[in-house]
Length: 107
Image 1 (tube, rainbow, N blue to C red):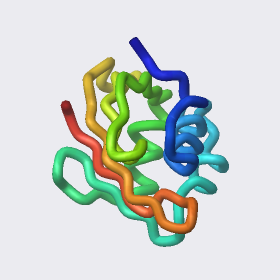
Image 2 (image 1 turned 180 degrees about the horizontal axis):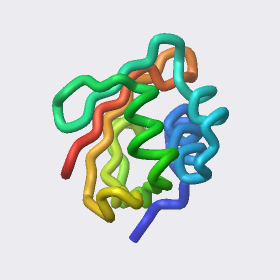
Image 3 (image 1 turned 90 degrees about the vertical axis):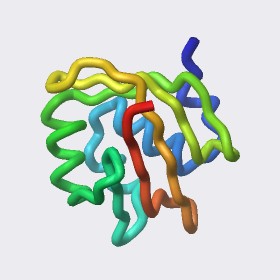
Image 4 (image 1 turned 120 degrees about the horizontal axis):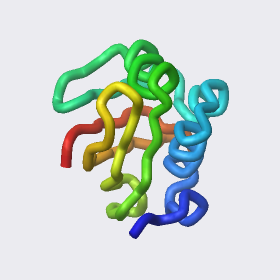
């Protein structure tokens, strides 16, 4: 079962997931705070390069299975044209209504 994006608890995370799923680069960067950072499988990555490669160029999409910690922790089936589909965990830090960091990896 998947949670509709509009039902995600945290507004900043909801905006991030909606923009990612729409492939809307401007909206996704609008959901991120200045200097936002991220990690993938425990290694910090260049945010823009990662998003370009893993989301925009490869049509990334998240189907959220569950959320915890007030919506700051998600488990989702993530798919893109490069890797196919995998079960992933996402953890978000939010400040001032913007995502300031996210960490993702296989769940």
